[in-house]
Length: 605
Image (cartoon, rainbow, N blue to C red; front, side):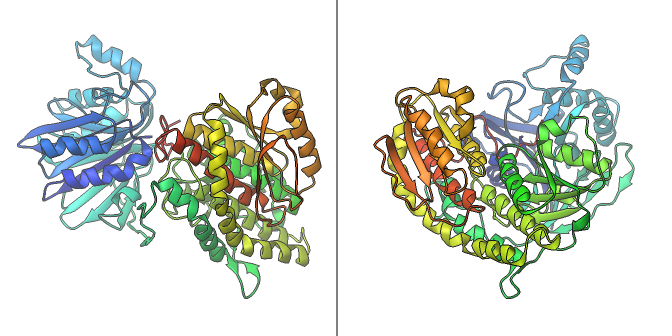
């Protein structure tokens, strides 16, 4: 879950490396570093902490050189400190790495048996030392190829060499890696986003590919050093640049632009004149779809949970959901009439990409719901449904989660119509509600002042519970996850009806319990479950779209949300939970955009 950058140029590169690393901090921010070739020596500088610290180091002691590599780290092997930060260098080679080398312990023992000393606790240093040994007798490309054949696990690598001052070698297995092209300058990066400010011409390495960059050219090879060709993609010109504007942080900006991003997404998929949904070219004839399997991780998994209710309600298709990290290791029974839908904000989530790869190897029909059409998951899917949310920088997903739900609802509604699982009036009603959704989201954001008061109730709490039933249950899970991610407070999401089967033991006097209760068929039952909590001293924070005035001295706070119809209620009810997590974290002075121990794009298993 680290980020890497490499630049080969005819001018000094350290400034552009720093700027690119700042864009890559969503992948990790435990430590940062760079290495350039300066006066025929490898000039390595690194620090614990953020890229800003590295930038301060360079201000005092600049790194010159027209070729260099950089890295931001999310720690796997070894604690976050300067020694374990990347690059990892010897006198003749320097390496940056994203991924995990699973056989690093065995390789380390073999190297140590030869008297070779290690400085760090990382798996990456094994790569550096293996290449160093190979370079005693071989040229760089052969040395790297021979080293890669010894490695088990995943990697994206950027490598520079003291004695070959004009080249960077990149390699990929499992972890994403892209190459960018410009005049007298070429680039290597973990994704196109990091390169986009410098070029819009990109190629993507596939598993097993290597590349050799100089300022003038890029050559691609397979592991046997055979030259291969790569397609050059022209990136879209995204005007929605990633800056905070007048907001304190990216997350607050991303929460408050959700009405706009929702409208953009809906407009992309709906025809207001024909009153229809513009989704075509299904990989399977809709009438032949026997089952849909929805696959994701974390927040994306929660969007899959919501979608399951929609597919069950509106279609006759069997629906299954799975966590990607579990799906990839199960003994699966594939069927050519099944559609496998993979949901990922970044489109680079390692577990989700691996699950997709399994489906592709079994010739299944696949669809991806992603925020980046240039991502690995998008490129490897039969069919792509972008969420059109624009760049999301805050690690805790907000607008991408809403975008995922919106696209999955639109897909469900379209399938229900073309399969004739619903009548025209039902389709028309749901489409009308969908078109009203951005306005409902806008109104939902106006509850912020009330949420700020609620947030104070969490400062002295040792934990909290989020309860919901039906479509609100996944939103309870997501609300609890957001609070954990941002404020580091323990929180659990539960189906309200399950409280009596164990979780009631956790309820004690003053414990904040968030009850999510839209006006649906579960409403009265949810109220009954709420009474079970009240009877045991729980402090109720009640969120509903019911217009009925609920007067109860045991409800500490009540938040009334706009009504948008039962099926779309989870999208609206998500907003106050995002705001709650945000304001609790703000009161606790937590790092909103970069919560501890987390990264935006999870590119390791």
